[in-house]
Amino acid sequence: MAYLPFVARADDVCLGNIIVNGSFEAGNTGWYTFTNGTNWKAHNLIGTRAQGFDPYRGDYGARLGGYEGVWDVLTQTVSLPLNGQLSYWWKVASYENLPHHDWFAVNVLASSGTLVTTLSQHDDQDTQHLWKQDVLDVSAYGGQSLVLQFEAYNDNYYFTTFYLDHVCLHPTSAR
Image 1 (cartoon, rainbow, N blue to C red):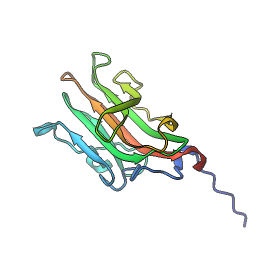
Image 2 (image 1 turned 180 degrees about the vertical axis):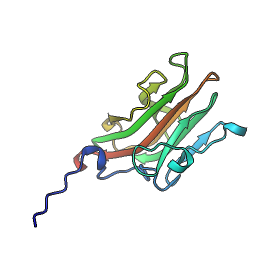
Image 3 (image 1 turned 180 degrees about the horizontal axis):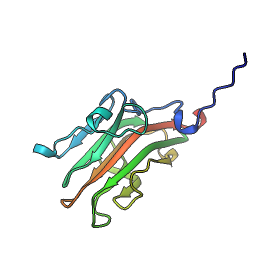
Image 4 (image 1 turned 30 degrees about the horizontal axis):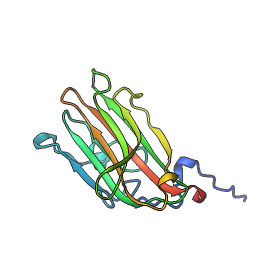
């Protein structure tokens, strides 16, 4: 009997991941969550397929937006590695008919909460219902302890849902 070597696709492996619970499979562990949704708009940002979430892979994923007039935030304080790379899978589903009113951003903040930079931004006009991966170079912030922030905003007309899964922050030499 011959055994073939296991070869993983790049999107299946995150060696040296600095993010705690980047796959969200441990629920909220490692993440600070915030939503300004109140009453019937109050909602969890991390959940399971059984709860109506749509993870890229596994049973858990994150879902930001999904209601009119909400602002949702997921953050985690991290020590960025030298030669660091951030990757994550994301998907958008929108009912918005006024373009570019609902958005999703990936930011780096100082511990004080001050914006250091926006790494990526997407909105209601991106390709719908298709998982995409962003791979970002964060080596300019290597050696610093900063806050990684995923945030989504929906205006008060119609709504957009932004799904997030498999967040990976690692030194590129670990891949």
